[in-house]
Structure formats: structure tokens, C-alpha cells
Length: 367
Image: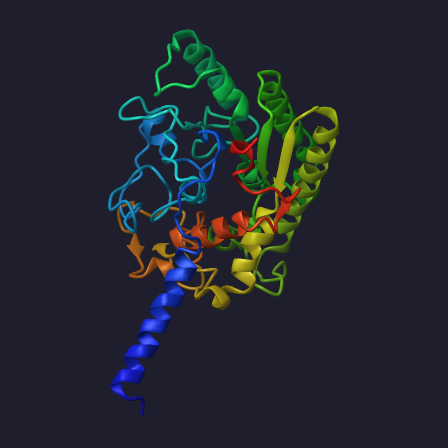
């Protein structure tokens, strides 16, 4: 039997370990030589409230319960990867472009919207629209800039970091339309073309620093497993849908090659490609190493084993159920990651081990 002191010591050690896993990097004073500004383009993985502000789409509690203690429009129990990256720069979280109340755009803008893709869909904020919104924002800002610290001048746009995290919904929508792997793969070049056009447009506007995330393992999401895993024949050794992940890897291979191409084509531009797929897949393959359990089960939702997901009763809707401790789950709602998982993902991004070239995330505010 363990003595009382030994038991307390073990509990304290476990708490310390979990703290490191959930908050794996310290929040320190930014060492940026220039005021860091970020413009983010993407989907629900980085939407900080755009869809709620733009279309009034309800994102209810328990979303936001773990950190904000209220719903902020994020599809997560707390902070997103983007939020942790902002924390690493000691700057404010990015305000959604579509939110006119209480927004502070002095450190950049978030154009990401839930459901967005590289190409037009039922959500009217595809990548091209987000870039057009940026162009409008820049033009209006420079038009009215008069030295206000709440606005961004020309140098601010030139020295900013432009982050892209998009593509997951293109693949997801294609599989949901019951297209074959071959048919999905045929769409990838056009997806990549949209990303290239977006980067080149911003480059022509003076942007020189780009941070581009590839897409995660689609086949490991409880939602996809619940909807498409009928007979276990397409599962890999970690229980993920191989065909879906193969499509993601095909997209990522093309995106990596595109980044190499653009580095040669766009002079004086720095384009960092980040292997988000490897980071996220590791959470599913080695979940216990990070203190997670049942990585293919969603924390918030309903549906029972094995994935706890029901497309008709998603997180926050009438009838949902939620786990008591989201920090033990990789998946928050079957599609999006928990705050605890996002913290680990952000820490690995900041490690530079998954970046090509291996630049620190804050490189853009030192040059």
C-alpha cells in the first residue's frame, strides 16, 4: 500500500505531467523586433468566430467551456491551434474579419470561416472570397490610416505573416458526395491551384512571409469513421480510414511540391510548409504518450460506441452529451480537436521539427 505522502506525491507528479501536456510551452514575453501581425485564411480549424458573426450560425456551449467559459464561435472546448500560436508571440487572439463589435485588428485579421474550402461550396466564404476580403480590408485600412495604433500601415502589411490552413473540407465534401478515391484525387490539382492563386495575389500586394499548413488525417475523425466505416476493411492499424488518409496525403504531397515551386517563383518570399498531418496522426497512433485515451471517440456528442458520434445530434444541439474531462480526448466533437490536443499540436509546430524550411514561427517579426 502507498503511504499518504507517496500518494500525494504521485498525484502531484501526474498533475504536473498533465499540465505540461496541455500547456506544453510557457507564455513568455515576445522577442519580436517588430510588432507581430498575422492574417489567417482557413476553415473551422482556425475560425475564431467568423461564421457566427457572418451568418449568425449558432455555436452553443459546451463549446468554449474549458478556457473561455462561454461560446466564442470556436468549434472546440477552448483554444484553437491558432490561439496558441498567437500566445507564443504574446499577441492578442485574432479577431474575425466579419465581427464588427469588439474587434481589434491591430495585430491582424482572421478570415477563416467554418465550412470553408478552397473552392465554392454552400458556405459563401471559400478561399478566393477570403482573399477578396483581405484586399478590401487592406485598401480601406491604408485609405484611412493616420498613425492610429489600432490600424496597420503599409509596412505592417508587408512584414506580416500570412497563414493558410485549408483543404480539409474539399476532401470531406468530395467523399460525402460518394466520389471514389480516384475522383477525389482528380480534384486535388484545382484545389492546389486555388491556394497558389491566393498566395500569389497576396505576394503581389507586398506580402513576403507565408506559413502553410497541410491537412490532417481525415480518416481518423470520429465523424468519418461513424459515417463511412461499414465493414472495417478500409481501416489501418490505428483504426483510421485508409482511403480518406491516402487522399489527405495525396493533397499534402501536392501542396509540398507547390510550396517548393513557389519558393523558386516568388522572389524574396519565405514559404514555410508545415506537416500538420504527421503531428495529428501521431496523436491517434500514440495517444497514451500524450495522456489521451480512446483517441477515436468524441468527447461531445452522442451515439455510443465505438465513436460517440451522431450526425443528427452534434455538440451543442438538443440531446447532446459531453464527457466530464475533455483534456483526455483528442477529438472534441467528432470533427474538431480538443483544446488539450490543440496545445500539443501547437507545441510541435513551434518545435520547428515539422517545418520546411525549419524556421521559427516568429521568424517574420525578426527580419
